[in-house]
Image (cartoon, rainbow, N blue to C red):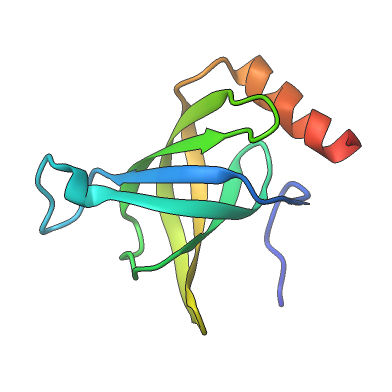
Length: 115
């Protein structure tokens, strides 16, 4: 696969919740909340495994929970790609705004890299 990433990715599985905030059929309900798991992450991007297809360019709020500490990190993201796989979809998200302490997010990612 042709890599276009500016940062190395860390393969890790963390519990996540994705709240869609910009789709044609969106309303303000929990129907737009998707439970998912990370496949890999970096400081500015995340790949998730999801059960549903999500249109490219969809904006969303992502909550990532560190299973070791229970700390939750919130980010505003935009979906950059979606690929079908046997048991669901892989989606790539670009983090364009951190809704958490960015130094804590970076420390968590570095900690996972070291651990």
